[in-house]
Image (cartoon, rainbow, N blue to C red; front, side):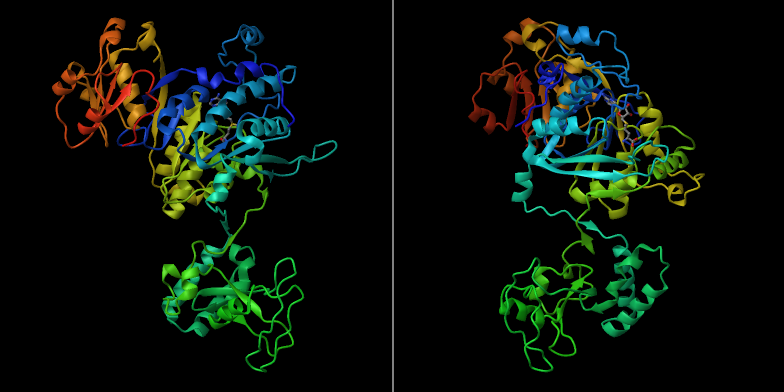
Amino acid sequence: MPNLTFKGKSFVENHHLSIPYHQLIPNEEASLTDKVSLNDNLIIHGDNLIALKALMPSYQGRVKCIYIDPPYNTGNESWRYNDNVNSSMMQEWLKLNRPVDKEDLTRHDKWLCMMMPRLNLLKDFLRDDGVIFISIDDNEAHHLRMLMDEIFGSANFIAQLVWEKGRKNDAKLFSVGHEYMLVYAKSLARLKELKTIWRETKPGAKEIWEEYLLLREKHGANNQKVQAALKEWFSNLNDKHPSKRLSRYWRVDKYGPWRDRDISWPGGGGPRYDVMHPGTKQPCAVPERGWGFATPEAMKKQIDLGLVVFRKDHTKPPFRKAHLRPISEELLEDDEAEIDDESNVDGEIGTQVMSSVIYKQAQVAVKYLRNLMGGKVFNNPKDHEIIAKIIDYVTLPHNHDIVLDSFAGSGTTGHAVLQLNKDDGGNRQLILIETEDYATTVTAERLKRVINGVPEATDESLQKGIKGSFSFFELGNPINIDAVLSGAGLPSYEELARYLFYTATGEEFDPDSVLEKENYIGESTLFHVYLFYKPDLEYLQNTSLNLDLIRKLPDNQEKPRLIFAPTRFVDNEYLERHNIRFVQLPFEIYRFPSN
Ligand SMILES: C[S@@+](CC[C@H](N)C(=O)[O-])C[C@H]1O[C@@H](n2cnc3c(N)ncnc32)[C@H](O)[C@@H]1O
């Protein structure tokens, strides 16, 4: 396999492993919630390399969808490569710490050095069935693709989407108005194993279904009346209405609106057998590509269910019905099914596979953000509707799917998740990371405006708020957990308690619950949590969890006890009998028990 080499690669390949874990410090003022918590929607202010590492104990392997929009390295941006890589060559190379501009002959190397450890971490955040989308343009697309092949594996490449954003009439040779989104799976094999099929709702399909339900309510089981009214509804639609393009769905049966569809075998070479015309009692003409159903029995079943429509006579093949909402297998078995019963249909209304080309003018998002924020606050924001579309495509609304963006900028991804949840009543969770100080004034402010509404906005959809909350965190000091071994730079009891409690439970740490003398650091949904620790090497070397210490603990029978200590002198069986989960400092802290 071809290999990507670049200056500094050997120093950054494993850099992500050496990043120390940092504390995450809640910032209540910048949050929008009753209770700041790491389980909430999150905005983290800080360098994503450090922030991702800090989030890892809570979110590793839990994220369904990552969308990132890193600096494109156009040479006109002001990003700097200043990761603290432990190598004298790198330190020397980066000493000037200049913004990476066109004059910088190693700008592609620096960009790759910046991306590699971040992509390594991001991969670890994804669930087995997770996916990552990365926006990029021609400056780095080719390098990024090779880097992704190396980190994610070329077998996990899904697509390179093209986003056409508009013409540049001042271009001398070609108007390159598009950019890309690279799409990789954490494991394409896993997606296949899960028989994953991604579909998007056809624009306008929902509106037809809503109208259909209204007509059904009005006319009951009378298909003819519903059909006539639906046909009229279509004809009265304005040409720009998204449902207009789906006018073929004007016919109605008990399963809902349908359109005709070819009955032949896709690609040709299908079976040829006799299908009798019910009127003429003669075999119908067989389509050139053969019948679309493998056997006469399968065809008969479709006919019996009323899903095949015969023509006037047998000289032409019949056609199939394609329903706006696909019919479920169970329904095909059940003739008595209720018309408006949700089980009538197999999930989504009028779905289609997404094209690898997206068309949307860049200016739309620029104007929209200006309207939302009351002025220009950010260059080149992405379009939240497009980002919502791709998130919607790969996540489930009611599955607590987590969406992560570690180059958050103006918070477009957060906006997209909130809007999607509003539209489909979903419960997706968002995590945003932004390093610049505008994490509060732009990223968080945007989400606040989306949630609270902006009454003075000219766009009506922005005036009313939508449901949502988020917790804002700053990065704190590094937690040098290995200090437990060496004794150098040991964190205070509370500092370590906060870190371990957060990372182990994913829940808010309450310093007021700490009873240091009793080695107690708080109660989470699942555990009572204990920490045997002092910033004193001698204590650490001589303290082990033994029967004596355990007997002194309050017996909180209702919940298991999660105990952190440097070592233990009790066996597994005893721990289990007494409902104790033991975590050894520092070695096991990233292998928390989940129950
Ligand atoms: C191209 S912008 C993203 C724009 C975003 N998609 C939007 O629609 O607003 C890239 C963002 O990543 C941020 N960024 C760059 N390096 C970062 C880092 N190391 N950690 C966190 N954020 C970073 C930049 O400050 C910038 O806001």
